Length: 116
Image 1 (cartoon, rainbow, N blue to C red):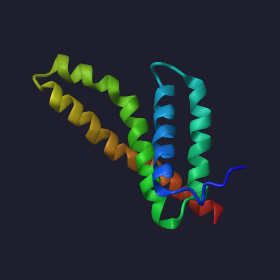
Image 2: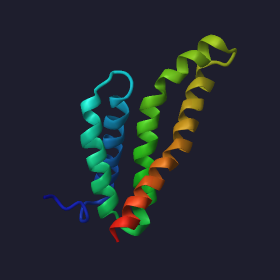
Image 3: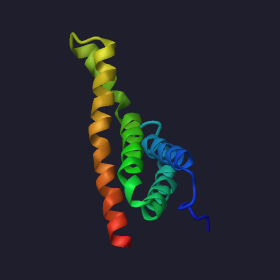
Image 4: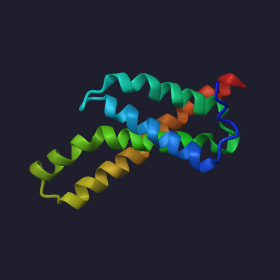
């Protein structure tokens, strides 16, 4: 088993973002549902091995990327059915993903708290 505790910060951040992208790609389109299982396994491994100061950062990054990928469908309805432009549509997706990323922080914190 690979210990993630000694990995450098950048490698852990990239792994967190990659797991978030894999989780986001699992739902709903392109529908690569099989990516959800390894992504959640990586999230659990990161949460259990994260130092106290980095739990929130890694959790938020994973959630931000996951929700950013999942909410990409939101851009088209904003552009088509409103008078807002494409910049505002994309900014609303980024802001929504940033806020929803805190749900993953709660997941990481709960996992870390249960393991200690």
